[in-house]
Length: 110
Image (cartoon, rainbow, N blue to C red; front, side, top):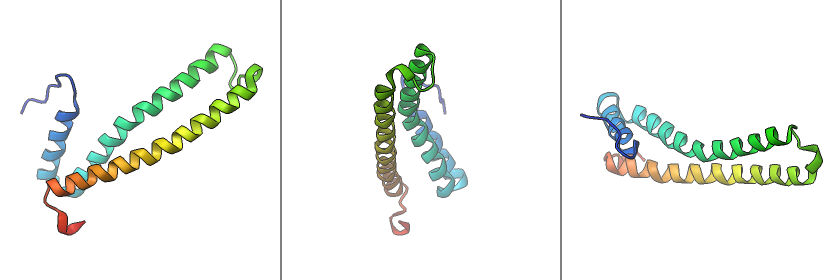
């Protein structure tokens, strides 16, 4: 098969997970499917962290002392977003996992 990405690489990775399932079995395919899902979700968290890091560099201080109340509010907001992110990522993984179980005919093992 040709795995050259045109537009989105997600389809190519999904095909590779199917190939892994055929060769190594479902347990290994679930592991790599989770890694793909987790990596896709980490992009949004990395963007938020990069923006915060850029703000710290711009102000020249790790805690941004001049605006400590604003910085504390932003840190609390980032922590809350991290909690929401982790919950949403896990819930979408459970949905994806159930789709794979159904697609691979493993309903009696779930």
